[in-house]
Length: 299
Ligand SMILES: *Cc1c(COP(=O)(O)O)cnc(C)c1O
Image (cartoon, rainbow, N blue to C red; front, side, top):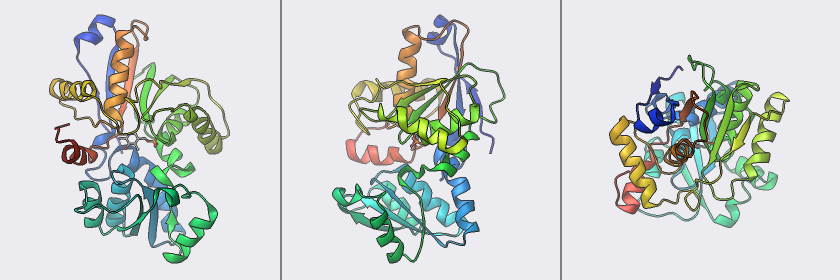
């Protein structure tokens, strides 16, 4: 499960005398990309051990986690059920097309109902309807997911000072923080507006997993570009230039925003001279096909 670590050459980095390395978790698996594979790993083992035949999970219509769960089910022999927020739109977008091509069964629920996705009564109803599936929460985040994400930092073979990662539910950053056990500085870039709730959520996820509270991490909450999955021309321009210069594709929901923010911090002199930074490419590139269809732009 080792993924490559790739050093960037960029005049900005030279000017500020910092090093930036990209940890290519996007290359972990062709279909179960990046952090979603890390988050599924121990959950799939647990589902097998408990002799479940079906995985059930939740997500929006463009969800990387829905795509990853569908592919993992196909690969490892589980039936999969996706509870999708909102109404069905035909033809299916590329994410849901892919999910159904992996035999995931989709059930659409209203936004109101979707909000109950963690309520015991709704989960009980789904459990009966689909004969006792193994339930993964939205985004796949639970303690077993945090455990899987501790492994992201285990195989980084260089010494470094900072690790940067995009954050949605906080599960991935929680795993990184727990895996580092107080070492290094971790910067989490929320992909949502008002991502300050992650302060508590990440702390709680770390504590539930390992019983410790760490303070060597912080949220960088200024680079959400208006909200979850919202884009602005300067973000798309940055991603395109980045891809062209470094030959590393990004996506606009998570990794594009994180790297945009990270470059801004470097420009502002946030990092002391000589700092070595590792940025986690969490994958999610499957989402780009949907962006292209929706916005008509190449990302
Ligand atoms: C889901 C996702 C994230 C966010 O992960 P969380 O564990 O929910 O914080 C980050 N990057 C990519 C590419 C993702 O698909």
